[in-house]
Amino acid sequence: MKIKLEQSTEILNKILEKHITSESKPWIEWAFDTILEFKAHYEIQNCSTNEETDELLAEYGTNNWNPEEDQQFEFTLTRQIQLDGEEEYYQIKLKLTFDPKNFDGIESVNFWAMDFGDATEWKSEIEKTDGYKKALQEELLNHEISIYAT
Image (cartoon, rainbow, N blue to C red; front, top):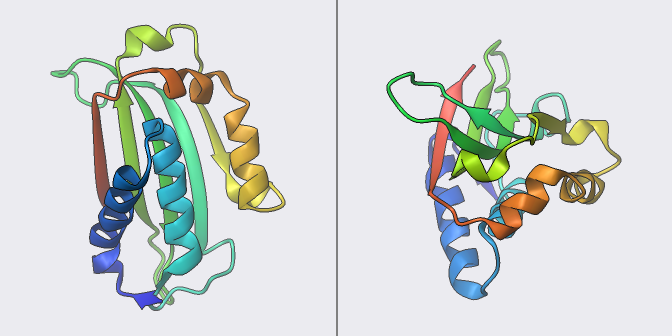
């Protein structure tokens, strides 16, 4: 289904809500189900579907973007797109935050799906990481869906 970029956060949220109510499992798995469904079933208008203009990114680490707030361990799944004729990229993000003290010693990483054969292989490699394994076990502090221009 083709959608406007402006609709992407609303649709991503609806997909997430559907997954949360459908079965009980860790937040990190709901997040992956959501971003993969969003990528597979929703095409952004005025964006070609090649991997350089419509791509998935997974990244995690302990960050402190605002010095007035406490650090958090963030696990973010992003669909990055570039609209035809524009130089900017847009990142549609699903961010999960966890208590950082439970992630001591886990280094920040990022995985672009284009570096793997397909989305299944991409997810499979992420599932092998310490950050993913730990996020499966930890209580979620917050989740956020947003869109940013790079």
